[in-house]
Structure formats: structure tokens, C-alpha cells
Length: 389
Ligand SMILES: *[C@@H]1O[C@H](CO)[C@@H](O)[C@H](O)[C@H]1NC(C)=O
Ligand SMILES: *[C@@H]1O[C@H](CO)[C@@H](O)[C@H](O)[C@H]1NC(C)=O
Image (tube, rainbow, N blue to C red; front, side):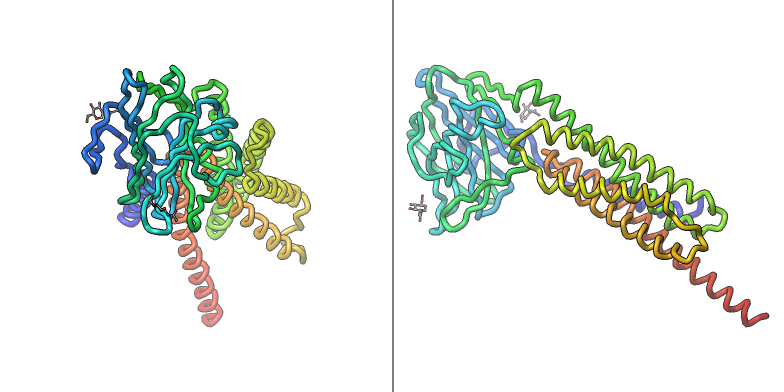
């Protein structure tokens, strides 16, 4: 292997690795955190979404709990909420009935912390008393994180509750609707203040649904997101090598056909997921998916209508074929990122797929340059030959 290829391999590999693992050093152990006011909490939990942490002391004798809720990586114009929901349960019912502790920096520049009970989806987080007593509440914002401190008199004799946490933007002094996709739709679980036990959503159906979503994601990323662009690269870059003459064509057809077959299966799993979860609308993701499927199907049928290479309409067919082809690739990449935002709590998929794209992009850039070099050189040679003759 020559020096040049070795260097290329090293560059690609490091691109790939940095794409996969940037900034993964984010501290996950909540018990290492030191509070600015030196408060000490006996228990803590790293919540599974929205970069949030819950610290608490449970007092058995009074059935009260002192909590410190930390919501990190937000801006000064965001609101945050941590709430108990004594009546709610799963995904569809976690919000209604939530008894919220709210905090945001208001127009005076001070951090305003207050309680707000939620009775409907159209809430603006208006101030109001909760169904249980909150003797103390305060909050502070610094270094992109909000901390809500409160004491809660736990309702009834229970210590285990559904809890929900959220964030969103503030406009003026009004909290706006929180985002309705990705982590913001998974930010609830159960918590037991006495035992310290927590669970995400806990249910078996939640687990199998997540598995289905992951399968849907993997199939579509591999087919539409990787095979399809690789097939397009085979057509564009192998063609210049005279020795690769029919081979590039078969490689291209094989890649695109398998991408299509696998991709349609992935598309079908997406439709099924959509119909299994009424009320959860991922309209953009769905519409882009349907568009991709239609264009790709058109592309398959157009293969059969392909004019012979020397036919006068072949140029037009080529333009059509490439336009639709590149559109499908661009739409696929856009939709994969849409899908990842819906799916991925830790953003690790986004990093992995961005790594793959950078890798493919780098290869394409090198091959593009090489193709131009070859084409220009050939032109030069044929001109020289012309003069020489
Ligand atoms: C977190 O850190 C504490 C002490 O710093 C340690 O005892 C505990 O085992 C750690 N937990 C995890 C999950 O790493
Ligand atoms: C802003 O927050 C401070 C601190 O809680 C509060 O005293 C003040 O009334 C709030 N102002 C508005 C306009 O909500």
C-alpha cells in the first residue's frame, strides 16, 4: 500500500471516529454533583431524557420530600417543569393531572418559580395551587442549567408516583408549548422516593414498541441512507475506469435494487408504526417517507423504459434518472435525521449516521476530484493526438 492510500485511510477513519464519539465525556453520575448552596441530598437519579437530574431527601416521619431538580443544557429563555402526577400513568395520560413546579427567567430578569396544576393540553402553565402542599419553592439559573428547589408534602400514603419533566421556550412572560417530538415525548417515568427506585415507562409494550422503532430505523438507515448513496457513487465514479465498464452498471443495479427492496420493507414498518400509534403525529417524517417511496418506485419502473445508449432520447432519460435519483438520496438523508430526532434519546444515532455521511462524502470528494483529473487528462491527450496526426 502506498503512502497516499495510507494517509487517506487514516483521515477517513479519524473522521468516522470523531463523528461517532464527540463530547461523550458528559458526566452521568448525579451523585458527583455539588450544589452551589452546598445542599446535600441522600438520593439522586439521572433522568433518562432532557439532560435532567433529580436529587432528593425523603423524610419518612413527615411524609415530605425535599427535592432539587436540575435541568441542564437550556437557555435563559427556556422554561422548565418537574411534576408529580398522582393520577396519571402512561404516555397519553402523563401530562393531564400533572402537578407542576415551574421555573423560568421572567421579563424582570429574575427567576420565577411557582406551582401550576395541569388540567388540559392547552395549558399556559398558569399559576395555581397543587393538589398537595408545597411549603417551599425556589429556583436558580446559571451556566445553562436551571435548578428548582422545593419541599413537597407527598399526597396519600404512597411514595411511588409518575413524574414528568419538560422544557420549552418562553415568550414575554408566557411559557410556550414544549416540543412534541424526540426526548420531550419520553420525559416521564415512575419514581419511588422511599426506595429510590425509578423506571422509565416500565411497560412491556413500551419496550417492544421501542424495539420496533429501532428495527424500522436500522432498516431504513442501511437501505435508503447508505446503500442508495453507495450505489449512486458506483455509477458516477466507476464509470471513468474503462476496465470497470459493465461492472459499474451491475454494481449500481445491485445496490439500488437491494436498497429498494429492503427500503420498502423499512417503509412498511414505518406505516405500521404510524397506524399503531394514533394521536402521535410525525407528519413531516411520514410525508417525506411517502414521497421517497413514490419517487423510488418511479425510478424502478423507468429502468424498463430506458432508451438504448445511442438513442436520441437517452440524454433526456439520463437527466431525468439522475434528477430523481439525487432527489431520493437527499430526501432520504433529510428523513433519516427527522426519524433520528423522533427516536433517539442520546443522539448517538445522529452521531453515528453523521459519521457515515462524512465518510461517504469524503470518499465522494476524492473520487470526484480524481474523475475530473482523468477526464481532463483524456481530453488533453486526445487534443495532442489530434495535433500530432
Ligand atoms: C457514582 O459515584 C459515587 C461516588 O462518587 C459511587 O459510589 C457510585 O458507585 C457511582 N455510580 C455510578 C453508577 O457510577
Ligand atoms: C418575575 O419573577 C419575580 C420573582 O419570582 C416576581 O417577583 C415577579 O413578580 C415576576 N414578574 C412578572 C412580570 O411575572
